Structures are given as C-alpha cells and as structure tokens.
Amino acid sequence: MANRSKQSAWEFFGEELKRIREASPMTQDQLGRRVFVSGGYIGQFEQAIRKPQLDAATRIDEVLQTGGIFERMWRKLIADAPYASYFAPVAELERLATKICEFAPSVVPGLLQTAAYARAITIAANPFATEAYVEETVDGRLERSEILSRTTPPEYWVTLHENVLRIPVGGPAVMAEALEHIAAAMRRRAVLVTVLPYAAGAHAYMTGTLKLMEFAEEPPTAYTETAFSGTLLDDPAVVKRVQRAYDLLRVAALSPEASLALIESAAEDYRRCASTT
Picture 1: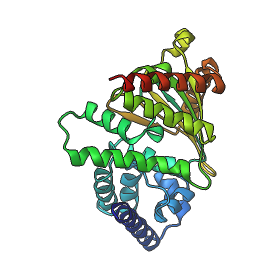
Picture 2: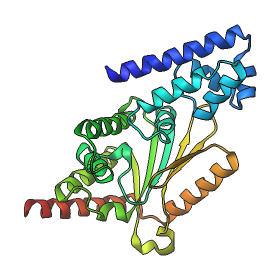
Picture 3: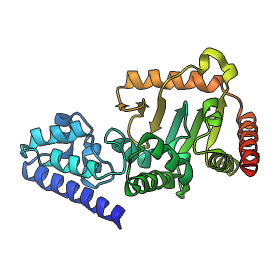
Picture 4: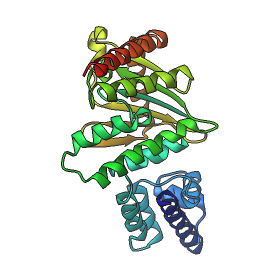
C-alpha cells in the first residue's frame, strides 16, 4: 500500500508538470532543452516512469516559474523514500535499466542481499536506529531486488572483491545464507558474477562501489559511492572512464566458473562454522 501511495504521488508530480508545461505553453522538447535533458526525459517525468534528479526539478521550477513547487515535492518524496537521498535517483534508474554492471569492494550489492544480511549491514551502520527504521530499510532493499525477477529483467553483471566473501557480516549463518543466495542466482543465470581475488594484486585496489547502467533509449549512466555519499554521472567522457575502470577489474577477476566454486566453498565453510557454534 505504501509503495502504491508513493507511486501515486509521483504520478501527481508528473500530471502537474504536464499541466503547467502545456499552460506555458511549451513542448516537451522545448522544456527539455532549457532544463538540459531530452524531451523524452520530460515525457517520462510526466508519466512517472522516470523520477527527475533534484537539479532537474529545480531547473523546471526556474523555467516554468512555479515558485519552487517541483523542488518541494521532490524533496518530500525523496525524504520519504527508504534510501539515502543521494541514492534514491539511482534506485529509480535501476528499474529502467536494460543492463547493470556493478563492482562491490566490501559488501554484497543491494540487489543481491538477503533480508538477514541487509539487516546486519543496516544495524552496523546505524547502531541506535529504531526497529521501524531497520525494517523499512531492509524492505526497501528487498523491493529493489524485485527487478531481477521480472519477466524481462536487466542483464546483471557483478564483480565482487574477495573481501565480500571474507568479511563475516552478521555471523556465519547470515554469511552462509548470503553466499548461497548469490550462488543460486548464478546457477539459474539471473546474474553473472565474477570474483576479484586478493591474488589480483594492484588490480584489487579499488575504493568505493561502481555501477554502470544502460537503457533502451537513453545514454548510459555511471554511479560511484563511498561510505557517506554517492555521485551519479552522465557526462559521456566520464562514463567512458568508469566503464574502462570496470573493464580492467573484470578482466583481472576469476572466471564465472571459478568464482562460483569459490563462493560455494566460502558458503560451505560458513555453514560448517555455524553448525558448530
């Protein structure tokens, strides 16, 4: 019910955008040029298919002289989302992507996390959080992963640093379940995972996550994240550099077959440890 309510709010955002734009009067292409996005993007905003970033909402207010209504709606809707404000636009783009490539240096990517693993990560980062906050965060993360169960899911490539397998998040039982979950997704070919081993040496030195997203009709986008902030990148030259960085990591990684064997071996070790404690 809450998800439907949030979608209805974004639909209202889009309806108001269309109403005010047409009253201006201005076409989608005309508004797009002045806001520095394509006319197609404006159409997707109006249909609540894509959510604008804050700077786009602010520029729409400036161009249409709305007194800041779209910025205020954006801030309210993003504030109510179960994600950090800098990540909320990324979660929306994941739903639209036809291909996602991701590098995870220390923890399992959100799209592959189990409920227990997500809970352990959330509590570790927010030791004084209320139970309601923890549950909302975990639910939001699991909701994101539903894109992998769609009839036509995005092509999903993941490179995991070996750290992800070795850092015992939540204890042995939680780690065993988390790695078994990844292995099961690999075996049903829902995701292609490779592991960047410690033996890769200098290639294994990379701080922060990388995410690359491709779309049916729009140019690719990159996202980088560190502990307390994230940056969404759409400049073609910068996205190309991020793609090259990801490619270098991927070629230094183990093969999918060797990666699966390593993940399953680590899961078995954790399962054995959990059974003896």
